Image (cartoon, rainbow, N blue to C red):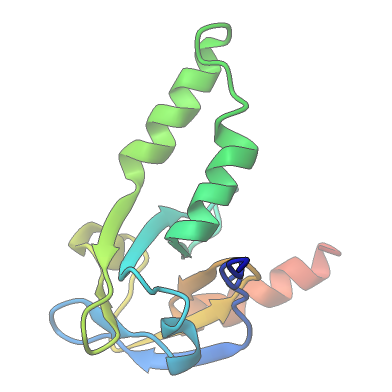
Length: 146
């Protein structure tokens, strides 16, 4: 009998959740199902966006295969720098039994997170934003025609 391929993660919608005193945020129920092995990868956003990207293992492996494996760090010194910067700034965390992930202190401080956070679906991953920053950032992007 053929085995069914794993369901591809598809993160949608926006959710405002509390960030507790320990730096933990509870994932929406609809997001939790995409972390069957309880592993989440926290990746700083590209292009200076003031948020954190959260991938499950399958989505991260697909991203890595598509964009990172293609880099030849032996032919281009900059590729090695990019790989080092990316993997050196990532964190692997566990989704606990309560559906929570713990954000590192430096991420909480760097993004100015406290009280409430906004989780925003972004296709194969989701982003964690300070709600006020998101609402200020969005109109700027709209004005730029992005």
